Length: 223
Image 1 (cartoon, rainbow, N blue to C red):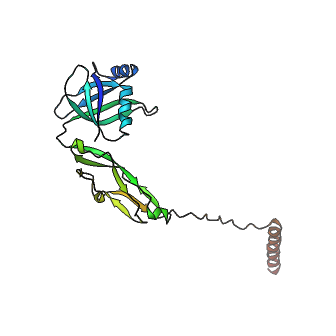
Image 2 (image 1 turned 90 degrees about the horizontal axis):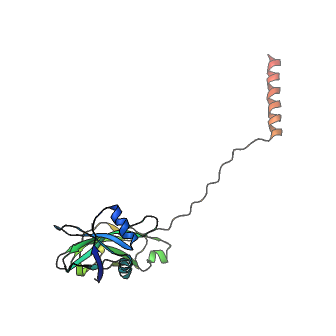
Image 3 (image 1 turned 120 degrees about the vertical axis):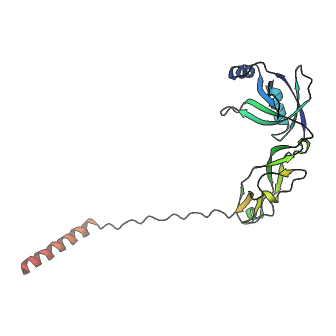
C-alpha cells in the first residue's frame, strides 16, 4: 500500500462562503476526522491533491498528512471526493484518521482480466455485475485492486464473491453475490410482417353490389 505525503493547512472558518474562497485561491477544502476525535477543517493545494490522486490512479492510498504549523503525525485514507457534476472539478475531500496497527474497512475495485471462452468462441456476453468489494484489513495491507481472471468461463458460468481469493484481508461483501457471468448471445429479433387486410378493387365492389340488387329484385317479383 502506497503512502503519499499531502501538505495542507487548517482552515479558519467553515461554510460555503469560506469553501468558495478557498477554491478561488487555488485550494481544495477538506476535513479530517476520526473515531472519538474532533474533525479538523483543512485545505490543500489543488495541484498537490490532483497529483496525489493521479499518482495512485484512483486506488486506495495512505495519506501522510502534514499540516502547516502542526507537528502531529497523521495518517489517513481518503473516504470521499466530491466533484462538480458538470465540470468534474474537485470541490471537497474527506480524510479519515487511521492507525497503522488497527484494521479499517474499505472498498476495493474488482478488475476483470482475460476474455472468457464463452465470449471468444461462442459469442456470449460477459456481464460485470459487481465492481467492488468491501474488505477489512490493516491499512498497510489494503490491496490496490482485486484481479479476476475470467478466461475459463463458458456460457452460463458465473463467479461469486465467495470464489474470490484475496490474501491478508477479510471480505465483508456477501459471498453469494455474483461478480461476473457469461450469458448467451442476444437472439436477433425477426420482424413480424404486418398483415394487410385484403381490399377489394372498386370494379369488383360495383359488380358485387349489382348482383346483390338483382337478387333483391328477383325476390320481390316472386312475392
